[in-house]
View (cartoon, rainbow, N blue to C red):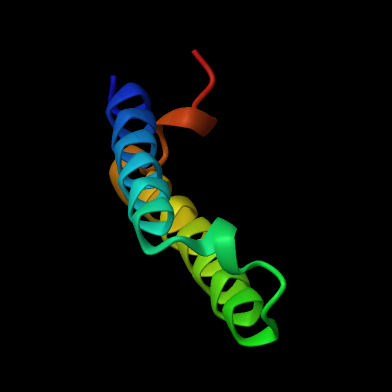
Length: 66
């Protein structure tokens, strides 16, 4: 059950982050090198937080053999 909670938390965080990036207008500034660098750093940070969040919530449950 913790795995499903972790996946839902990751999904909600990623959706909120994506909505925030769209509200900032990153798609309209993709040709600007500073915006591209900032967007890439933001996406990598979002990915790292997603992975950390999954393992913090799910703990060892996804790797347990039944």
